Every structure is written in C-alpha cells, then in structure tokens.
Image (cartoon, rainbow, N blue to C red; front, side, top):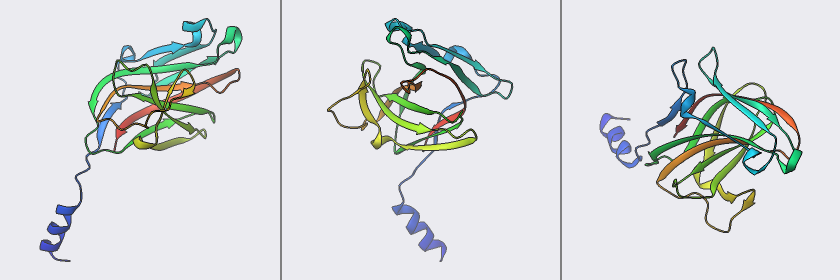
Length: 177
C-alpha cells in the first residue's frame, strides 16, 4: 500500500478520539463523587466512597432490603460532549456481583440511561455502546428512545440486586471511545 492510498483511506475513516471522563489517581478528590443510597426513601443501605492506596476510586458498602430499601449508588456530575464517540469504556475490578452503569444527558432529567454489567473479581474493561443504554426511572423502563444525546451530565454506578449483600467496586477510569 502506498502513502497516497493510506492517506486516501484515512480520509474515509471517521476521526474517533478517546475522551477521558474520569481517571482516578492518588490526587483525585473524593468530593467529586456523591453517594446516594436508598435512605432518601427510608431504606437502610450504606455506601462509602474513598480513594485507595493504588489511587483508584473504591465504592463499597452494604445493601439492605429493610424499610423497602435495596440500592446504593455513586454519582459524579460533569458536562461533556459525546462527539463522535459511541461507547463508554470503564476499567473496574468488582466482587463478582452485577452493577449498573448509568448516565444522564441533562442535569434536569429525572431518568437515567442504564447498562448492566457483571464483574468477575479481576480487573476488567467493560465496553458499553451508548445507543444500547435504556431509559429508566425508579427501576421502571420508560417508553422513550435509548440514549441518543450529544451530551453527558452525570455518571453513576449503582448496585441493587434485590437482595441484601455487601459490595466492593474498584474504579480506575471511565472514558468515551
């Protein structure tokens, strides 16, 4: 293949630039993130967030079904354009449990767009197509289109597997690809 043909080929490939949404380090501020548990509805679940010795975000705690509870979440506000990116890649180490990754397209939305993922106890790169993220509000799927915005205003991780359990999710980075 000649230089001229490579140059011509590159003209037809859309420019895809990875965009880092959050890259944890020992200098990361835990105040960038907020815990929202079922206590807002009277539940008894308890989530905690810290930056561990390795510089990763650590979301851990206990989900309780007492008092109609059952979830814990970790949220981060941002204002990011999606651009030509079509997927989110999260680098995490879980505890073998199922979690949800959530985004909002506007700070005024009450609903989130959700993708569920399974952890396996090892470090994983989870790739989530944005167009596959479905809209839901308070656990109910909504009859509106999947995520199709050019904006992300919030990221969140949620655990709510309808059973009492302890959990531990270590987060290294979150990026648009």
